[in-house]
Image (tube, rainbow, N blue to C red; front, side, top):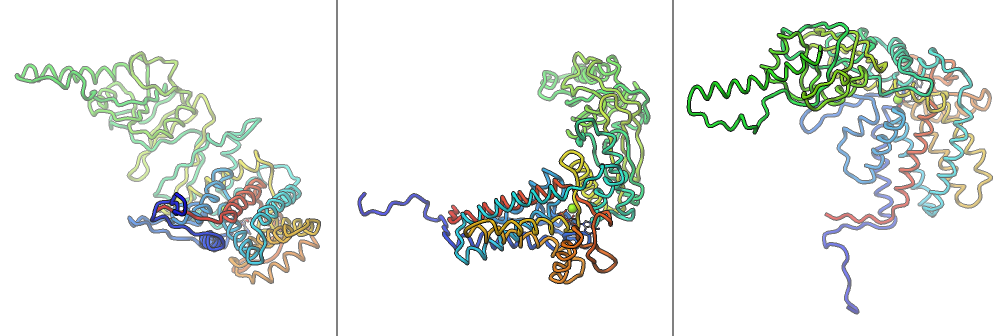
Length: 519
Ligand code: ADP
Ligand code: MG
């Protein structure tokens, strides 16, 4: 083996090392973050995303934009993950987190050019995160989280999003009312709130339904459309002739045999309906298919039934009504049934929806949102889900802080104050982190039509004087003012998570100095 080169990688492996690897990763990460920058804040613009298949999504939501974009570069993909993580953890602040991650990368690149070692950058950034979290804690408002304050939080998360013609105000009221319905002493049962959108009306028709809404239509037109005090079965099965069963293997040679076979089938199908009837089911939600003949047996017996109910929906119905999901109609036990005050079917344009209200078990509620068109309804659904998440985060994860960039101004200031006491090159990284955080108020200002540098100067001096300064959008421009006075308030958890997830991704990318890609 001596003197022979040893190959451990396949021949077509592409390899980039050192600064080249860093630069290309950083450039990719920055590019992704730049792509969502213009959507930040109440004056952020929307993006229209068109898929290969021609599907169109119009949105202002950072996570949605990044998900819909077909991003392949692995480092860029990590920024997408920042947004996804942010969405999962707190439900809002996805643009904030990805813009910050991009800026942390940009600052890291400058540091690398000045020969600051990646390890020093990582350490400095982590130190800065600790300081930032301190600053966020200091910014948490010392006010009771009453409906009024929570509505402001909901509203802040919805401004700039497409909320149709109703505006964020009334929607925020609905959101907070929904949260109050599912709040227990310990926590908000966020999973008990669903958002259901229906096209065909203006968004001002959005309402809170104390129950679950199912998208499915009754399987037979002669079924009852309203059932009071309903016993509900949630079934995970098909009510059809079992395929491949003995019945299907008849070798039919005469009319009698054919009739016999058909009768056997009928018998099996009627058996399903009878089993439900005998067990005392009033309404059945079936995740599988229901044979037309079973449907008409059920209709004859005044049982309301739905088929192809999606799994999520079936679970919600089960949870709300106290039903157990059952996989067979043999030995149906009324103990497995759920109960609801009413199940009613309503017509909306061409669609029918089933409302299951007054469930016996959980306080399930549905925010029933209406939108003029599919695009409006979709964006409204995202906005409502974000708003529900932020109110939950405010209540369950440590309160609220001033929005509009004010908390970021305080974070940068706190970090700079403490940077001086940090020794070595790490200090440069800590300072760079503070500069990176400035990108958020700067971008809000730029998107509001202000000069970002002038705005930053004014924000800092107002902060020095009054302790709080954000970019408030007024008319066609923005002004520096106290966000709390203007009702612009974010959950503290959104800021904490954004700082942490952005730093995690940026430091991970900075640490990489060797990219080995197998083709
Ligand atoms: P993200 O995906 O990060 O939530 P958004 O586009 O929702 O991005 O923008 C969030 C930022 O906009 C937050 O800093 C928030 O405080 C700020 N913001 C929201 N409403 C207003 C408002 N009316 N005036 C000023 N800033 C606002
Ligand atoms: Mg937001």
